[in-house]
Amino acid sequence: MTGWSCMIGRRTHQFGTLRELMGRATPLRSGDELAGVAARSAEERAAAQLCLADVPLARFLSDPLIPYEEDSVTRLIVDTHAPEAFAPVSGLSVGGFRDWLLDYGTDTPALSALAPGLTPEMVAAVSKVMGIQDLVLVAKKCRVVTAFRNTLGLPGRLSVRLQPNHPVDDLRGIAASMVDGLLYGCGDAVIGVNPATDRPEVLDSLLRMIDEVIRRYGIPTQGCVLAHITAQMDAIARGAPVDLLFQSIAGTEAANASFGVTLELLAEGHAAALALGRGTVGSNVMYFETGQGSALSAGAHHGVDQQTLEARAYAVARRFSPLLVNSVVGFIGPEYLLNGKQILRAGLEDHFCGKLLGLPMGVDVCHTNHAEADPDDMDALLTLLGVAGCNYIMGVPGSDDVMLGYQSTSFHDSHYLRQVLGLRPAPEFEAWLVRMRLASDDGRLLPAGPAHALLTRGSA
Image (cartoon, rainbow, N blue to C red; front, side):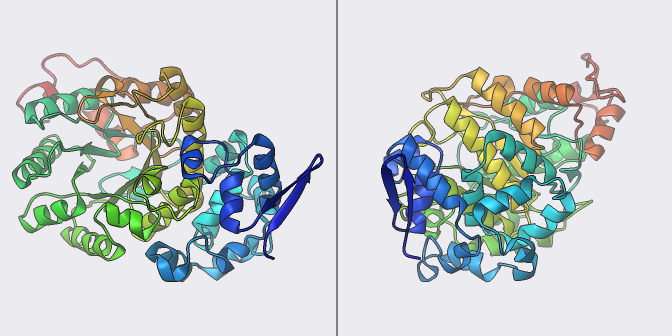
């Protein structure tokens, strides 16, 4: 087969390559328009989706969108593919795979067993012919459980990254935000600070402060300072208390190079973090962040649509069995996701694709201040992700990150979602909240007076 064609009305639409077909079939987003890979009309998009539905899943194994010889991520995808796991769906087309995913009989064990047999391009393709209801339903059936000092991703649980950033890395300001978040039951996913600078002395002081709070109050959670992986590895060498190793990643070798990382460097860091043995209930030590548009912004997209490239980043993450993967869905800006509608669709796609590939997905429900989006859009995405079984979300003081300069979800938002959907924190963290008299046995937050242990210099 050298191409695809589909007639709608009196017009025949033709697509010469699988790469072109994938781009034209993608729901509208500004980044694909910027890259010149988007459909030129709604009719062309519908034609591409009809053609894509008939493509055999196996075609993605024989026709890589980015050549094997040119890209380390492609080589990772091909070399780690598990044919035995792929066997149950190997004879299906993209459209047939959608039907299989939605079938009553396709349950959580079946999806977990299938994950190693799927490639990012397969899951990206099927997402392009699925509606929002489909993305939510299938993701809800996926379950990915990870552990370090607590257990994340269990049924009926929703965790929160406590994100206490500060524009000048002031330890007192960061500590105040940490306490605020803990009082709202946030922080079970990770207490993670984006530093304003990568200076070694700043990184070490942040790591030691977070570690001291966790140890002093016996909090069953993990800390992380989201500096470049090389800076964190240097901190390990200096003896700093590193729990999780963080890195932003992308879906092509060239895009990862723009972040200053290679697969070999990630493997070295993973080994260094494992060797510390700081986990108590598990050994998932990596934390990755991704976002649609990162490859295009680096000029490293190879003519592939941004959502497929995002899914390819999940192959990189999957290689290292992470504790957390976070799609920072609206962070890069309206050049890539123009408005609330595009952000909402992209967030659900990312969560679906990551979960289907076997990853512990969280989503930063966010937008930049110059995007055509508002809190109502974010509330809608937040609620849909909760229904879809998202592992964790962000907790930012007042939902306004004063260091990164974008809008995310607040500490209050997590409590809304837990209440409306009957969700609870990670079990070990929930027990700590009850023990600290921050929450009741039924999950309600309790008022904390000025004499509470978290608000004094005493220990728990």
